[in-house]
Length: 179
Image 1 (cartoon, one colour):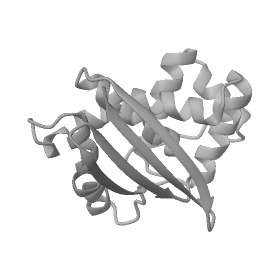
Image 2 (cartoon, helix red, strand yellow; image 1 turned 180 degrees about the vertical axis):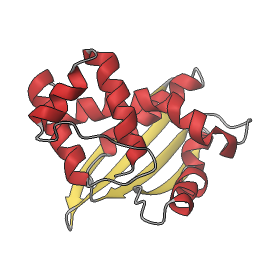
Image 3 (cartoon, one colour; image 1 turned 120 degrees about the horizontal axis):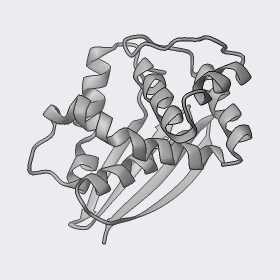
């Protein structure tokens, strides 16, 4: 997992749970004192350990945490990748172009990066369907990011996330309808 995610997760946890929460989360995850740098890649297991501990501490589900974190990430993603976006785009346009713009840039910048595979189909002027595939099982993070993007553009969306597992990968159909 890219260090950017860990770095932003630390900020998110500190904002949500207070200054000492991150260190407690790391300690309870057997990662005591671990530092994460945005330019490095870390084992997915470390993120999973942190998420499992966060579930125990907060009582929230893994998906609820990932979705809220995804929503939190959006301003930071726009700061980082905003120059790749057409200023005329809105929510559905950004979703439709994510694989071609941001994910291509992520893979170009770091050959070891493995963002989820996204296939986005524009069904009509108000609806897109995103096929999400990843062995990380984090479509809930994507749902949160979608909510954050819609909020960024002051748009309202309805999201349906139908997910399953095939060959160890999460396969999700995420339908996004502009209201």
